[in-house]
Image 1: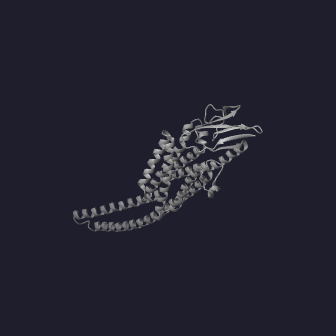
Image 2: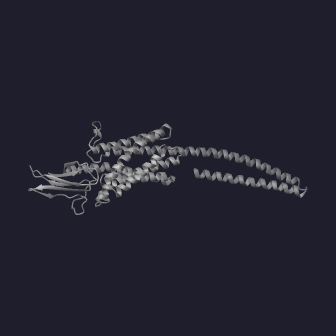
Image 3: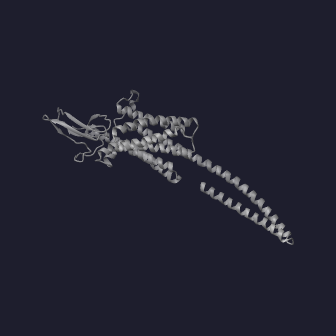
Length: 383
């Protein structure tokens, strides 16, 4: 039977398999990221072999990595491993494709509404998709197959960058909505922390900065709950559903940590999956964030409708006021012209005064007409 021995970890840098035959240890399949290896690239380090009936084969696995290791060597038949990878591709394709679709929707909203905030949201969704792709080993296969060091570092870099863009999105939306955001300076501190963690993960000691990013993101999740709860108490629109999304994101983060440490509670075993990393919670989280985005778009649409109605009322009121002023000034102008006609035989001084009054009335009439045209242009732009 053809068998596959796989280590279900996508961030392992160098993995070498050795088998003991005739009393000697000989290298078997090298690390898939090794350029000298003829093995087909795979998301997981793996060794393929076939055992004869009753044969025993000792295997030694040598692993080198700068990240915290969670080694789970698992033996599959070749057919079972192929079926596992196909199921993983379906789940991961839905997750990563859905996140990219969310990024595309945010990009379209940013283009049509000329909103920099939704441009930041599109960048955040793209970075989240890159994080999921790197965490699941797809970037290692398709983007940088031989950059083993960067493959391990990119997961943390993309994750911290996505969190940084999320903080920027929150701050920009609070500024645009003129909302008093609690813990403003704390959010700025977390943004600086994410920058340090991303830069350190790219160029520094990976283990240290991975731990910094992990604990920093956990603390940021708790702060998010506090901020969302405060906004909900102030009756800020859509904050209740955002509070639920933040709580679920924090639960997702805690579940990943427990699953990595092998400490998943028995009551949550229904969330376990033989696909690593677990895609079930991530897909549910994607659906939750889609609901949040839909609620926010609905809120923005209601704001635009309210603004249009308010502008229409103001334009009607202003139009009536301008019409009354034009009628009044027109009456004054006619009276001034009549007065000038009646006073023609009078002295030049009186005629000049009458002409001046007529000129002022005409100028004022022109100014009112100009203001009415400007109001109409403003209304057209807003609508």
